[in-house]
Image 1 (cartoon, rainbow, N blue to C red):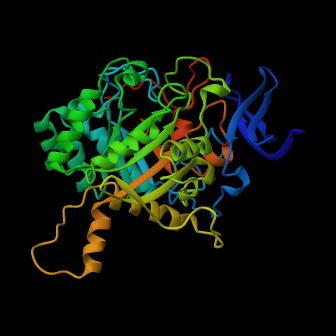
Image 2: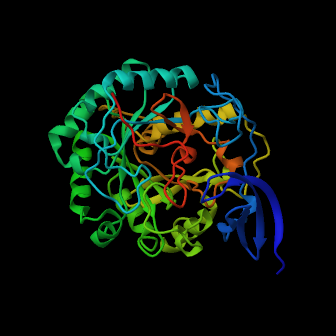
Image 3: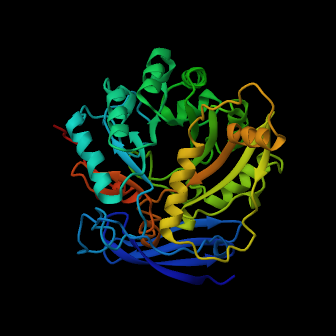
Length: 445
């Protein structure tokens, strides 16, 4: 089959990070990003392999420009982030890095963590305030480094709630959560949810990706989260040849731990921050391949048609499916992606729905039916709410596969040390030789 050009966008050179023109091309059923730097030559990276077909995976929506942009448009995307006036989506989740220290040395690490610096509480208050000024209240994710290394983590959580943020989630490897008293303190501080690094159920996976056999620590953390009642999302970095053959095992494990585990979130490996080698196409797994593996590994319990494109970020960034988990089984909620999405959704509405969805379904509700008689419908709603289970994925971009059209639709923003809001993939963008576009070793007050 002849190679067919199907789209034009912009990207960056993986070596010098200069903005360059890029083309999306079809070769058989595969979609590639092809670009050429005048100094460093041509680069070709896989974007999409398999079904659903690339052109079918879309959800039309209008732009939702930042309420209060902090930076002017000057050099063009991705060099004016802050957010700038041209960015096309509100902040759905704001990520605050509260330390660059870590208690692991993972082979893959967005942050390339391992420093010794923490922002003081006044600086963190400034970060919260900048988010409010830029986008108003949104969902907050406290990250790092490893945020549980902060002795004042509870104070940081309380501060966020006091400033008006209703949903605060902890992004953690979970090693410190095996301390039950520590988990109690987080609950008392108002922590709503835990985004728990969870790459599989075999210690060989953790030895390869995280450098240590830490499965027992993960299991102890989940046991404590169950005891204390904090909703948890299992977050799996999917690396071909390492753990892509055991994805449904993670889903089944999550189902066994409903209602504490609210779902599984898969992140196909991206090559920025700390990476072991320069990636080749065989080192990548695309969203349709991930859907296909989940379907095949579950023997059709999970169907590819269960998954839908997002209504907030760019459709090519993610997928999601919603279920009720009962007695280890999945009951799919809603239609499938083959149904016509006829109406163009407003970007503001997509952002609002996504924030509300995460706040409602990624935390653990405390309501219980009291003794008495209830209608079957009331009981059904209660079961659905408490046994809700999501399966989702987010394909972050790196210097090889960056599509600036997608980047302009990003709704996950990192607060820089200057207090600007930077789209996640731009903030973590790393050249082949480790040069960062925005991230730098932080030297806090």
